Image (cartoon, rainbow, N blue to C red; front, side, top):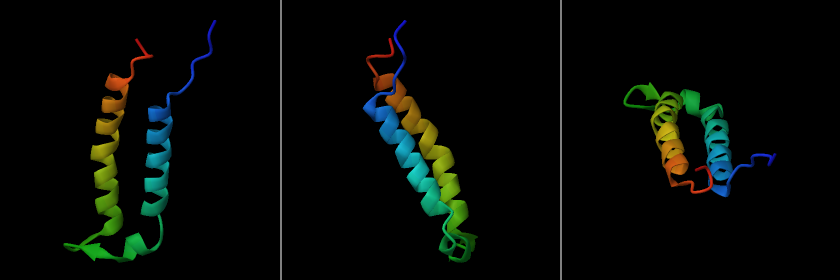
Amino acid sequence: MKRPTMSRWEAGLLLGIVAYAVVAYLPWTHETTLARVSVFAWMMFGLMIVAPLLGLIVALADKDGE
C-alpha cells in the first residue's frame, strides 16, 4: 500500500497558515487597533475566511488526489 504524502501546494498552505498564526499572536497585534478593533481580531477574522477558501482551491486543483 502506498503511503499518502502531501503535495507541495498543501505543505505550502499549511506552512503559510502556521506563519500567519504566529504573526497574529505577536504581542503588538493585541494592542494596535483598526476601527476600534484589535489587529489580532482582524487577522483571525481574515484567517477564518481565507484559510478554508485556499484549502478548497488547493484541494480542487490537486490532480494526484483523484
